[in-house]
Length: 545
Image (cartoon, rainbow, N blue to C red; front, side):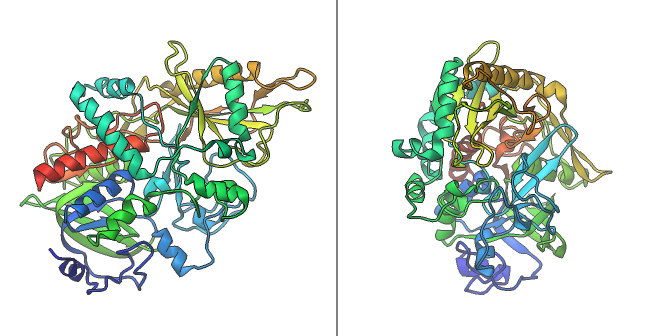
């Protein structure tokens, strides 16, 4: 199918004018109300796995339609020339998905209420956990901290072996010699240069390393996908500020290499990819001939239906994230539309072992080492204790860009001892999660040990007082295990799918996101999601087309 024929099916004509786009931020005409159409390939979602799939399919000459529930933020900026992503300290309606108040883990600055809007950060609340998701073209890449970390090979192997999936040594060699390097290159991995590390903006990281070494932990340099040359210019006052302007959870205006600047940009530049934002897939129907029909709601910026559409395709790639993909598949089965969906779907869910923890100076603060009033929002250092037989974990030294001079914040990543489970409740019409304190008790134990060691060996005042656990931020002894940035699992590779992401029981239905990973990786997961997608899509293009 030619590009012209593809656009004609969308009702767009040769110029591609639509609420979606064929180039970043382009094609912002009035909404098109056509009733879908038939396309060779549809990808649901625009996060890491979806973006990898789109670029590689487009490079191979295939026409691809991507459906995204959130906004096209580059297009939104064109329609609203004065708009900028808000700081963490001054969230606006654009910061938050369909809520009247900010949903960030820690309230900072101006937390005034605002109107509901299909904003950039969504929080999904369950009884014992709050799960954060990026919303918009680019998915989680829009709101993450950019830590670009390759997992430990042995732990990566063990994680899959724990659920009965065994990679050969050759397959592991391919992952770590081919696909992880490819992923790191293509997401824009960088290492902070020493002059940036030595600047006032990373004093919090330097002090954190000093205290961590004194406490017996191993210092780790953590790569990031931020453009550090841009940060260097920010620090010098020669470029617009983002990382040095308290921007991270609600989007980043400059410097950060999210997917709209890497995979998605390259995919769109082929001319073979069209993205329709504000298109929410309700369920999937398997047709008698093996094709698929998607029931899709086009929504406005209040998440209201504009119209209902039907799209059909020959090959379908699902990359809506751990929660989104699992819910979409299970809901479709509940409705009787994916009758052969296997019982492995929903299993092996986890929070990637994430726990937030914080320390602060006590009342007698004079003389304590300041972490600096100015802190970059892009983390670049961590403390490793993952091989400790009693307290295994990795601690990211996180920024605290306001109230942070005498406050320390950490994202602690633990191993997982017990998997959660996702299931679709048809009566309540929502995804349910089996997850409680039994899943996170050891994570809290590790975090409290970490804080105690850091308090004991960290900065002391002139009067000998130590830092204490920060119960101002996290009332339960300075630790909060309810915060989840990295949901993983639900459609695990080699269990619910074959070894390359083909959903078992179906031809031409593929999964390409964090749901493929069983619950934990020991590090921030998006590089692994990218590497797995690179491996899978290469195989699928070579064998299924």
